Length: 103
Image (cartoon, one colour):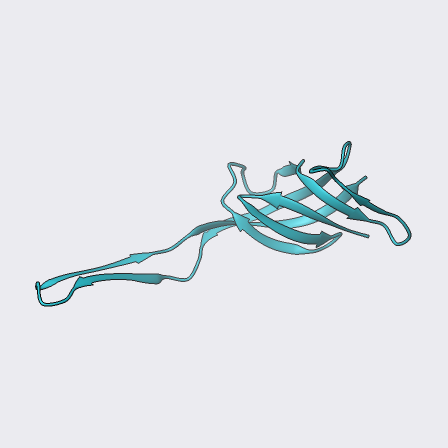
């Protein structure tokens, strides 16, 4: 059984026991989060596709922790003008463990 959920403007294919990294959520580590934006649910024989969401479906996940991603460098410059700016960015994330898919 798997589902496709949307969180943080991105879509993820999840099944029970999966560990996924999503955009940062406001939840404490160890708490449970319900992902309500379920776009598709497949349970072996039946496929439910939402228009745009599957009604009554939700995915329950446990928050394992928060962190920051790998650093990326943002470098701007203008040719022949002696203008250079270097800046780093680390995107915050939340690590989730999928516990249950309800359809």
